Image (tube, rainbow, N blue to C red; front, side):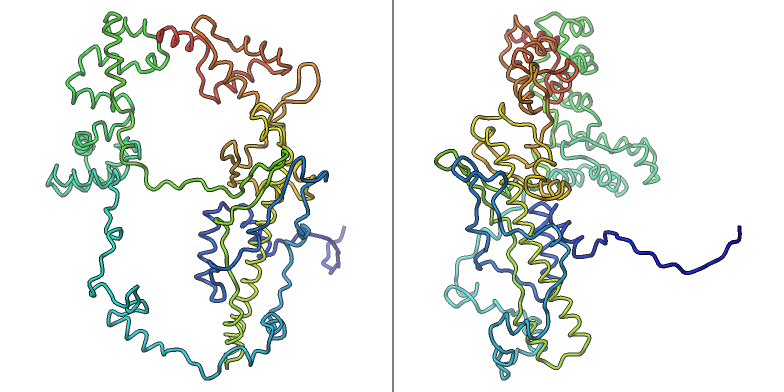
Length: 519
C-alpha cells in the first residue's frame, strides 16, 4: 500500500467555547461574594463601567408567584428569557450610529466642546501637597482642624487574633533571636483551634535547627495563654491544662491516655484502667468537662462572612408563594456611553479607538450576562418552590425526591446550567435559610407502592425516633427499619446505619450506656 500526502476538505460540527460564553458560565456558578469581587475587578479594569448605586434595578420589583393562586401552568412563569443559545451571542453595536441612538441625540450635541478637565499636573501637585478632592468638603465646610468632633469609630481597636496574642508573649518569653525565629514559625503552624498542625521534624529540617531546640521552643509556647495552646493532639491539650491545675496525677494520666474509651462512655473499663471507684471516676469526668478542648476558639478564626440569601420566598394568601431575587447582593453597573462618545469624538489614535471598542463590547456583554444570570436564578428557584410546595407548607417530612433533570426539563434548560445555578446559592424561606442543592435529594421507594420518599425526610424521621427514645427502649438499626416499614418506607439496615452516622448519632449500644449513665 503506497503512502502519500494529499489535501482533503471535510465538513463537521463542533461546539466552540467563546471567551464570552466561558465568562457567562463562570458568572452563573459564582456565589454572591465571588460575583462582587469579580465585578470589582472589572470596574477597575474597564473605564466604561461604573457603579449604579442609586439607579433603579430592573429586577427589583420583579417577582414570581408560585402555588395555588399563581396559575395552572406546569412550568415556571415566562421571564422573557432568551433561549440557551443566547448565551453564545456576541452581537453588540459599538459604532457611532448605535451610540447616537442610545443617547437620543447626535454626538456633537452631547458634550460641551469648551469644557476642559483640570490638568493632570495640577491634580498631582495638590495631592503632593497633602490635599485631595475631599480635603475641603464637610458638613460645615471645614476640616478636622475646624473643631469638628473626631470620628471615634475610625479609631476602634482591631480585634486581637490568636497569632498576634502568641507573638506578643513570645517576645517576653525569650530574648534569643534564634528561638524567636523558631517560635514564629511554630506559631504560624498553629490552627484556629489552638493546635500545632505541623511536624516538628519537618520544621527542624526546614530551619536547619536541632530537633531538641525546636521541641524546647514548642514547650515554651505551650506555656502561653490560653492554656493548652500549641498541643499536637487532644490528649496533650488536656494534659497541659491539667498540669497547670496540678491535677495530672497517675489516675488522670491513665484517663487522658484512654480518651477512646471515654468517647465510647465505657466507664467500667476506665475504672479498671485508672484503678479508681465509681465516685472517683465521676469526679475525674467532671474535671475533664471543665477543660477547653479548643483553646484557640476564644480568639475566633478571622472574620466570618454571614450567609446572604440570593432568593427570598414569602408566603401569600391562598397558599401561594412569592419568589424574588435579593437585589442587595446583585451588583448594579452601567456602561458609560458618554465617555465612549467623548473618546470617539476626540482626535484619538487608532489604538485608543480599538481599545475603547473592546471595552465597550466587554462592558455590554458583562451587563447582559449579569441580567441573564439573575433571570436564570429566579427561574430555577421558582421551579424548585413549585416542585417542593409540600415542604414549604408542611415541613421536611414532605420533602419530595428531586433531581436536576426534572428542573431542567420543566424550565427548558440543560442539567449543567441548573447545576451551576444551584451551586453556592441560598434561599431564604419561612422555614429557614437553605442552599438550593438542599432541595435535591435521592429517592427511597415505598414499602407497599405509592409515592417515593426523599432521603432528607427519612433522615428527619430517624432523628425524631432517636430523640424520643427512653433509657428502657433504645432502638437498634433493625428496629428503626421496622418502624420505617410501618410508615411505608422501604429501606435497608445498612442505609439506616449510614444515615445515622451522617447525623452523628451513636450506635444503640453507646446510646443505651449514655442514657443509663445520665439517669
